[in-house]
Length: 474
Image (cartoon, one colour):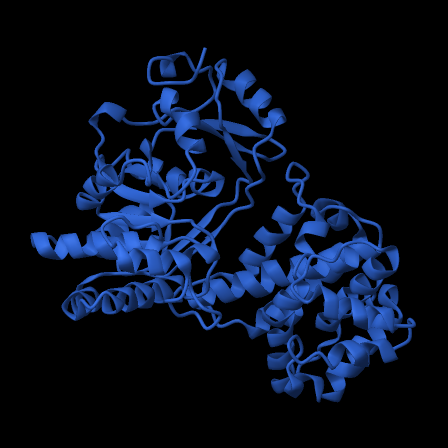
């Protein structure tokens, strides 16, 4: 039998089911991009809120694909969320009241937007149609199309702008828009894009109204969410005693930080576990430098030592000890996050890294290193040097990345990186000496000249490159 409203009472214990009457809930949230992460993350938070606030059910909107709608329609939007831990748990999420496919029924989407208190989104960075500088790309095909036919939008920016125009025309207050994508200053960038789109439509008054009245709080999200597979479907069916066409899974750790512009709802969000903060940037920086910086170091050093997964690398005492020292002694001092307990956060990250139930492959983390190093390790190194702190441990991840690039080239393996061709040419000229380091450091699109020009950094990277295992014993 299939999971649905009719079979919900048959779900086996100890699986948790919604702690509220679904028939008494009303849609107050429109979410664009109902993929696995949204259903494992924001929908979980709203599921908790519905126990106290019945008008925050979700209308999930897919901008293109009908896959989620087709899977969940006969399940009345219900699905299972499995927490992948040593002591796994399964619960049924009931916060999604319906799933709409925007191109099939735009009028229904606008009707839901008319009654929305919140509009949220997980459409990936490319879904915002921004330039490399973070501004709206007016030449993007979707933006050009939406400027020509604004009443039938295809882009997230087009949908939000037109919905806000209708709010203004009807004399209603605007909804609050919360971007939940991994995009720094996501709320600010989305706000600028919507205002710019309204101006490009020739509606200066609308742009001014949006700027004055509409809230676009920044937010940060975090929880490792592996893709759904048949093994998960079997695990969930055994737990429920029912079939679920599209369950989702994540680690138990979950974090949502939202800038404090939620008004009276701030207490509700906080009660559900959301961190409502004066500023989101310090949390973003902590995640980027502590979690992502350590991830990259583990990936490049771990692959060089023969490990395949994060938990496997953390089982190597050398790597586990090294990464913890780097996080606590080299990265933490670079953070100014008064609302975050940094030592406790480091402990949480290390615990997450050791979770054997989450198969997080180092090879995937290693992708696009040329684009990630600056934000994950190099900026921290620059600040450490300016403060007179050592950079030896921070240099290890950089040197390990160089070794990784050379190994991939020599093995004839693909290098997933926007600079793959340039990096392959550098790797072809490497001979294993510390002269290789100079070849990489000359790549100004990756390494800031001001950092490269500092001897302590160059020498630390060179030492680690020549003997990575010795470097791990620092």
